[in-house]
Length: 333
Image (cartoon, rainbow, N blue to C red; front, side, top):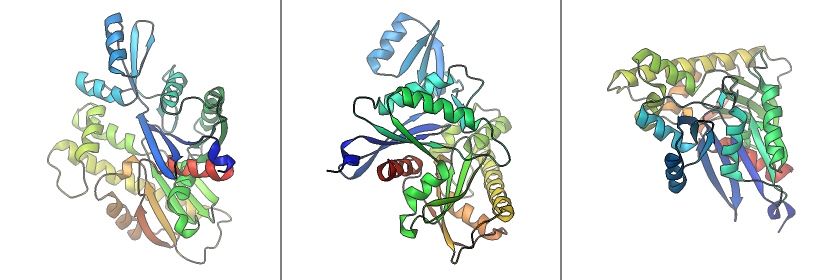
């Protein structure tokens, strides 16, 4: 058994909507995920005992109980509340003072600590938003701090590159990887595994959810739940929420393709590719039925500056970024 297999290796996708952990156990990839979200409920010792008995992740702050992870959405839906996010637009949410502590709690619930086993962990970062840092340097430093305190040896890669590593082995990791997440869409063009250009677009699933909620007067958490349960690009929109989701998904796809056209068209020193490259889509916002076909049609109709051989959907869209980070940890740490 190699040294890389003796010591724990973890890939961690720290996304706005979800935190996903990937490991390889006996040659198979295994994943765990928690929503990167929380709700607060009034504190009482009885409630605290019940939550502990039910195994619901929570923490106590003054006169509040903070329920975080997957259970937060259930509480929010039941009590008609909005979930709150430790992160926004791909980085730590400055409006939430306990953002870093909550991200740490969720990471610990998934991965634990690495100090006793010499664990090595690769985590994802968003690409730079076009023309702006958007708090990325502080976000990276803060995430490094909490993961380092847990005892892990760390590396990081951008989300788009992680998608390339996870999905484009057949093209020797040459092509375009896109992660359509909650806070932003991340894009990376790679050539033989080397990142050529990586960037992000600050419009993604949260934009669709909040815009559709505003247009219909519904709670955003409820809109997101309906989207994940039943929305599809099939022309059949039974109510105003589904109609609004269709409108803002069209907006999202159009904005993403326009941003890619502009970025690749104006990039300096972009290498001359001798053949068309594959493009792969991943992330939770790419999950609705028909998204792939809708995106590919819009891409083919645009003036996209790169020749694209095929457009595919990742084998496990929710887990691609974590898988790619793990592959990097296995190969380079």
